[in-house]
Length: 316
Image 1 (cartoon, one colour):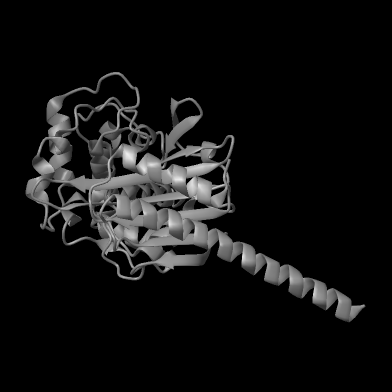
Image 2 (image 1 turned 90 degrees about the vertical axis):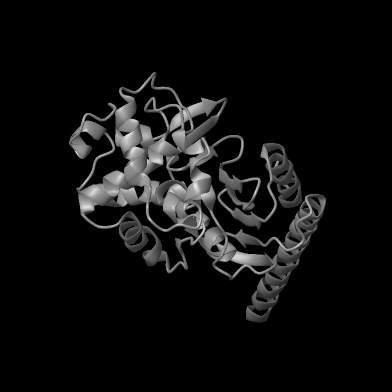
């Protein structure tokens, strides 16, 4: 009987390996087709199955990939870590925290881009002049927002200024640099090779981080996976509905039906460069895909990638 059980378990194990390889082959084919279509033959990809890598394409270990807006998750988690320490609350308002006549928006509203801040001054060509600089700019953006006056209607409006303000709050509450505080609380516990980028470091809280594609996949699973603090119950954290069944919360988009998914894309697109970005998605409390691309991929291109990956993973 023992031999029969052992043989059965071995067959189950081998069958699982074959299925994993089939899945990895389909994802590889989908990715290679997509990046060939977009003229980006060297872009890396990592596929995790329940947190374990089953596919690596390209140089996934080099910590040079710019997360761009995907780094907003780091800032949101940093605020949460300070809340756990009792130093912040999601319902605290900017006037209290900054001690100035700041717009009446709470930390939770900043995290979900629903505090009424608009327009986004960072998008008016200013970010280009901050590239390849290391001095943080979140204090400067805070001054702009305060000088502009009261916030508008509290509806969702994606705006980098929200996360610049969160970076300023983090620095003021702790008396330490934003990057140092967030690296120690969010990234070091996961042993990630993450740091502010020499290209976009000045954009820190809203777009300044870089890490390897493999570490980005690990980070995404650790944050949004089946047993992760956010992934297990995303509605327990600041969130706002932005479309039918789609929500924004803690620096990422998510939905829970018909299949749970957490995702975000980030990109830089300047005429003189750089033109690159990153994307990650965790699906069905099982799969995580993280990619980087070195040409500019617009919304339609990312949507095409998502559809091809979903088909490869046989997600309905």
